[in-house]
Length: 160
Image (cartoon, rainbow, N blue to C red):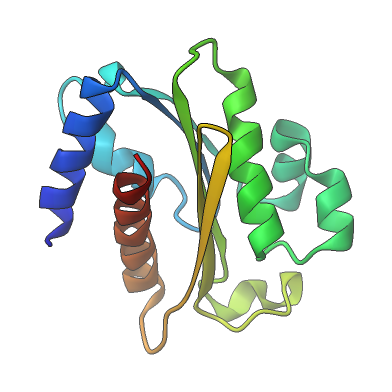
């Protein structure tokens, strides 16, 4: 299924169930939320989005200090906690937490032990978390980010 088709079906599901997305993006730098807000009426299904690119922002905004001391920043644990903790700011009762963390280039290699191209993304809904890991090979940084966004949309669609 094409990304736009899945995204449009996801939007219909979100509206029908009166769900709001709460998003914590790292590796995608806001591209996930942009896929939705470029369409008119996004405020009916998006609550807010945070770009937590640095470890400091993950600590301050998402309270991940303890997890980051014990785990690689690019890990299942961090993606899971990002998805859960990003929902804590919402006043809405019916929310979905969505997150991603990954390594897109050699420049940030000293931040993680993971291979370049490794991404974890998670969705938190109804007190359950689903985390996926992908290792993208032979893609540019931009291509990897786009593929991550596509995978996040598919994961969100599959969980609600």
